[in-house]
Image (cartoon, rainbow, N blue to C red; front, top):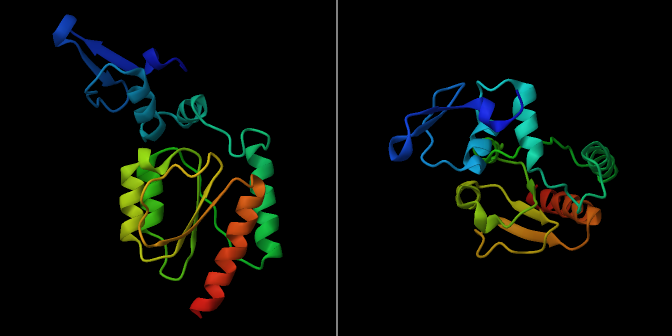
Length: 180
């Protein structure tokens, strides 16, 4: 049941046609399969293996695809250990989930946000960055296409591939030591 059409129900014909999620009965405002996929990635009623399928359809690899997700995570853990930084990692393509993580960050945490696309395409995330009181470092492999960023963003790392993350962790450690 991996094809998108198996996860939606259609009612009616022509202009009166409605399209709904087959799992939660959510009405879609448009017939765009991209919107359906976006909903399926975050719908809690879609079986996990199907949600992962929809997530992987449009997942863009960090670092232009030369590093697998497992290798990247392992490398980041190693870098954090070397930099003596405590680290918790989260991954999601669903903006609502990322929004929750940002808004629920503890007061003394420094957020390193690895973002593949332009931040300006995600106004909810930019607004959340305005609301958090934590210092934020944005790591972007695609280049800096973000527009104006809130004052909580203390730095943007871009153009160094995997080294961008290492530089961001070192910066986070330095910011943490100056806060104490």
